[in-house]
Image (cartoon, rainbow, N blue to C red; front, side, top):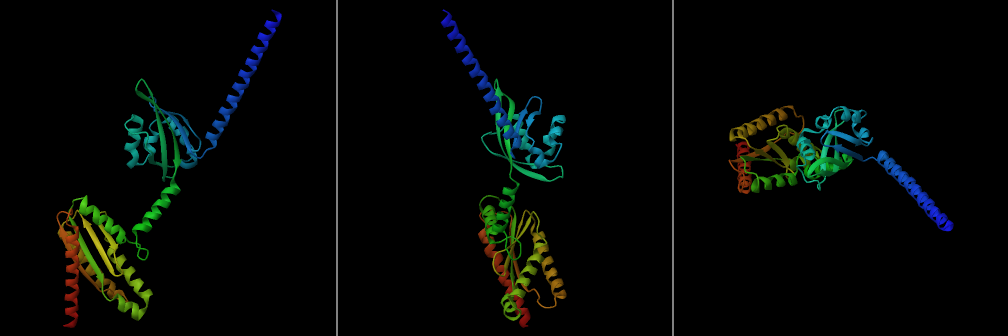
Length: 312
């Protein structure tokens, strides 16, 4: 009997020691995980929907947005809505209301203390109780460098390296959109620089490059949300005008001719000689190829008339 009691006590001691060791090990593991979270560059958060408060935000958020952001969020439940980029506001609303697909990666911009918007990609996980969203927990990663590289790549893909304006690839992309997807009033203005070969042969290719850059700057000054300017060949430019009247297009062409006269009056070496033709349609879908062909014909008609004027 005594031996049995002793064996029982030994078992209890062993179990207790094992329990205490396991608890200590768990505590150490928990501390290790917490330290990893605290030192991570990624932002980990735990947001309680009912109180509109963060129960936890890792300190790394202040690395990107500035000091005091965590305290601000604790004192002001509307702080996230005030800091999110206006274009991303609706996404944030959908996130906290459960009206979104949480399996998708969220891309959002948040304003730092200097007024700059920083880019983040976010993995959010909802927690429900009785079918109701109660908590959102997630990880946010800053992607400023990734976005910058992507923007630089897109710029190089869509811009002419000599002039800095849009290139043929960009024009063809917009051309296809207007021809197949977006039906709006549109005009194409084809501009062809006359005498580029003469300039290259007599003044050098550097002078020819300066002439092309001068033409690009002259017509690109009219760029806007409705007007895009692209260089689609060595000496050929095109202006795409959307959602505007034909009167505005005619006025634009007239202003370009005036600008050429002013440029030539102040130029000491190389002058701009440019043939221009445009065409207009009240709807773009299915009309772009014919529109381009007609503008090109009108440009060559202008070129011939200008040559005849010189001969006479």
